[in-house]
Length: 332
Ligand SMILES: [Ca+2]
Image 1 (cartoon, rainbow, N blue to C red):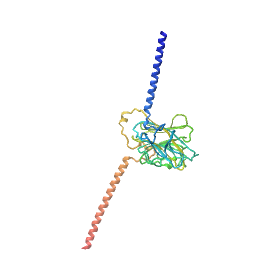
Image 2 (cartoon, protein in one colour):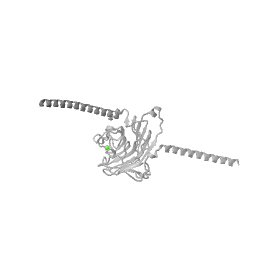
Image 3 (cartoon, rainbow, N blue to C red):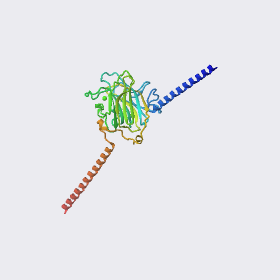
Image 4 (cartoon, protein in one colour):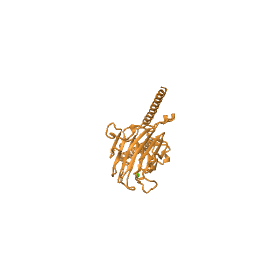
């Protein structure tokens, strides 16, 4: 009798432990799911992507959805394709994990041009920067597979780099963006045997870029910049272009995670920027035209134009007066 009772107790105890454990596992899962922001993420199955009104993404150009990927361009010449989020991003601290694949028939350097990831003010634009507009406003990350500045030989391609555009800065394709680059690294991400990933983290104005392209399941730092300010309300996107040279450029997933970061009272009161910028910009040797500076410039241009016109008008009136007087003198 005693034995039966203790067996019952033991079973009850085991059941209780099992229930508690599974509950805490479920809680952990909920916890993780809370951080993955589905509305900003693109992942399999891509149901209705680009077509249904409930989809959070739009397709553009040659981009097409297959069961395994969103193919931005096929391995064919002169193609441009993109996928853009429809929802503006209003998260301050986040991490974007991108699973991508670049592959094709071209040997040696006979392939191109690569793909780009975006977090920008404008979306769904055509243009020369990996299939997106130049003079963009926001963040651009380029997986550049073709060395355009081929005489430089200072880096191995594919080369991944990042740039912050303010609406006036130009990405120089002929120099593979060297003049405006905030940081970058070489990464053997083309025709790779392993799955290739890229991680962008933006937290407390620090922008970190990491890559995982050699199947080691660990992140390797690629670029790290502090003092980066990206306004809220921008759109995620990915684009690609081929020219004379081509490749398949695929996005398998783009997963956005919200980071929980404690803010100091000063950070909470910090004013939002309206134009992207990097503090201590001179360290990157990037020429940035300040919004304020261009306003002042415009003011003085107008002021001097008005002054110049006034002087001309006064001189004109005086000359006209003299001419009239001379004319009158001649009549008398
Ligand atoms: Ca290039």
